[in-house]
Image 1 (cartoon, rainbow, N blue to C red):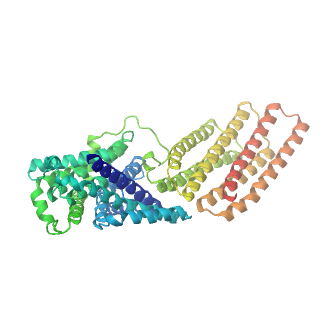
Image 2 (cartoon, helix red, strand yellow; image 1 turned 90 degrees about the vertical axis):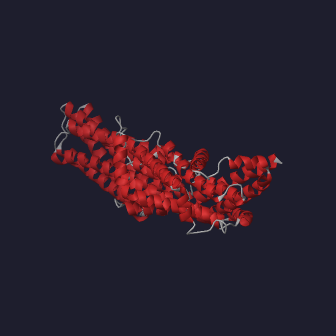
Image 3 (cartoon, rainbow, N blue to C red; image 1 turned 90 degrees about the horizontal axis):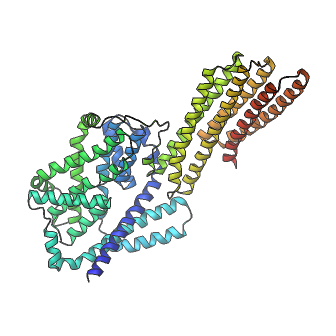
Length: 541
């Protein structure tokens, strides 16, 4: 009998957790475009930050995901600490929506809902339609899991040994409340899902194994246990991200402290909203929501002071690892945000390349030899673009291992391809600069005619790169197609310039170093043209 009970409870919990995972994953995919707009909406206004945290957590159905995502933004300097704290406060309210989903109490319909959605998922073809089916299937599995756990726990009500076990944590005294809250925190920290422990709590209360007061105390503890996910996520993060994670813990622990201290009054206050004898699930969901709403009201005006306190306690990193992008591994839980931010970073690479092309253009335009400082400047930009490529690749390959829809997979691969082409273009631009410097060091000057031809190639490359980069930014296929003719013109111009150089070299008996160096510069421009053309092919194939 014990084995049968254990199987139903474990099976029900597993299905519940898997349902939460599917529903949360599906909601994240459906909310992808909205998540991309978060950064544009967030301002220094803490009220807006709280509302955005609430909205995002309701969308993705996971406070852990939205909190870790926020800490990732703080770690990547996309959000300030104060903004991050506002979002985390809002996430605490948003996560209470899970309790209200359970209020629907449609456990007996969980199996047909999950089954119908699973059948639809198998036969549907479109990504969006399959994602909707997956989300509904997750919802059905949540209720199915709760129903299995509830049925599994029914026989326990009449077993004296289990009754004595549950009476060991009873919120009938202050010590009992604290012990029960600690148990709720411990279980949530182990499971790493407050939604799961909330479901277990509601199931235990519905079966009469714990009373309402004990259920409320467990829920209070669950708010502390859920912070462990954020703390674990910041083990290798910077000081600011650690501050955000610790703030999450401080806020929730402080909230539990006032709630347990005033527990009898808190319970009395909750009776004004719903009677647990009439609807236990709604009463527990109400207790969860009101606790977090009160906590947010208390702490929202104190966000600035809390940020200052954490900055005092947690010192800035002594050996801060310099990042050039605003991408962070903590953001991989929300792939849509990573994809949107990656495109911005690739466009930043494009701006750096434009700066490199302009630097070389200045050298030709002034008809002066390239200086060591200019070569060093270009070398620094190229090395920075190497880091851009590394950071972009690291984060994007991790989201490719996730269950992305076809459109997002394609966009991720496109971003990675463009990033690789841009980094290679920067390599050739540095090679051009170094070759020009080598000519200077060997006291070899270029004639006005040869400089004029190089300047023409450089300007044509600049125009081609500008057009292709703009087309990538705006997703304008027509602009890509128009760029093909300019790319072909550059190829013709390269051949014409090479032919002129070879014919001229034979007449004037130029040195071998001059001849090979000039040809190297021409070939570097040809290779840059080829890599820009690769970008065109990526979008027109």
